Figure 1 (spheres, rainbow, N blue to C red):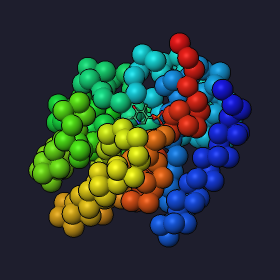
Figure 2 (cartoon, protein in one colour; figure 1 turned 45 degrees about the vertical axis):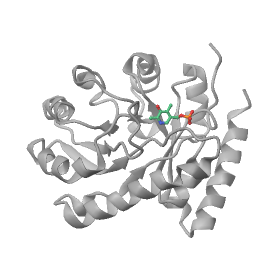
Figure 3 (tube, rainbow, N blue to C red; figure 1 turned 135 degrees about the vertical axis):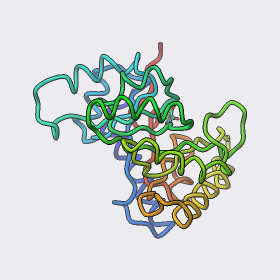
Figure 4 (cartoon, rainbow, N blue to C red; figure 1 turned 180 degrees about the horizontal axis):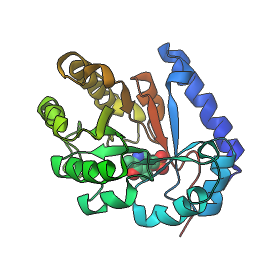
Length: 237
Ligand SMILES: *Cc1c(COP(=O)(O)O)cnc(C)c1O
């Protein structure tokens, strides 16, 4: 694997260029370094290299990294901020709430209930992205776009949950440009929810774009991109 700083510089240049092409401000695009393919050592390097937001998609794989990096006595600003980006079983919510600040995969009320239960016990509020299956692929998680408004209404029953935006995964395309309709549809759905949902003014984020398609996602309005392979690399088994 290349040194982390080389990855960061390459990715930064590409994010800048995508912002310029689309007339967006660089500071409106946040980066999550997805560390699920790498060791604790590499995850530490990423954090020390300036990547403050780390993402993982399974608690089992994240646990040793979280404990090593966040379990100590350092001040909060010396620790990574964690994002849970993978599908979450309701019975695992208690493992991650209080450790992962953001949940990107809220896609059903039973999970909302489990998150709320753990969060209220800890007296924390959990900023969540609602995962939407825009592409309609059977293999993808997420609610259907037309379910979004009623789903948001139902979240009022779980006051520890703070919906802050939408998340989606585009299908892998050899030609990234082909993902554009998926990202555009998520942006339009956010616009509709901003107008029609009682959470409207709090829904400001779009979590979309991965290694293969983040530039298109930024052009379509991503405020959080989730980058694994291209940013921290991937260690072979
Ligand atoms: C693994 C993963 C990523 C990062 O994947 P790369 O293609 O390596 O950038 C982003 N989002 C989710 C939900 C993931 O599971």
